[in-house]
Length: 237
Image (cartoon, rainbow, N blue to C red):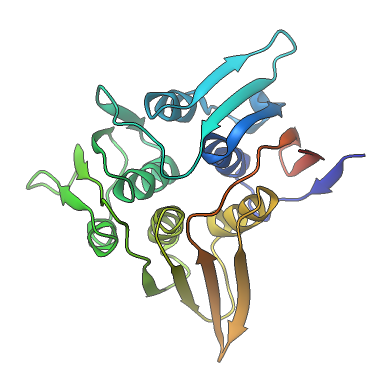
């Protein structure tokens, strides 16, 4: 029987993006149904395929995503477009920065001033135009370093980058937020990562919201239905 899991976000494409990302990093085939209800994620699927994931759309409209496992992405053969999707930029930057690959991200999404330092803290080399915009060139870390960072709840993009980079870091990534709040994109990520088998904690410590992620987990493939704009039904592995 399916178990309904309401994503905390009102942005269903972000929750669906986390599902696609985790499916692309899991070992084996995940089946995702109802993806069309969560907005346009074709760009993310194409980006994951450029990194070695395979994806096909079945006749029933569901997507079958076959991942290679964390640490096993390949170097893309071309520029990866991210358009104006800031979540996609943040997630892909964290993924590329924590793997030993060279990649260029292009688009019109805004690159925050704090994004490159987070990638460098993980061990990546990052180059941007003098204007500070796109494209972003990333030479990923050979042995990603877990990040410990304190953020405001408005720093959702930075938190997403740090969390995704932590997946391939050898150790525990720690993200602390002032106060008890949590950005919706990160809340979605925590829920989906747990479903795929990541070891991640979410606690309140001395008035701060603290997220800890143990790096290099073996994510397990899943069968997932996007049941509506605010519900993800998980059917089990």
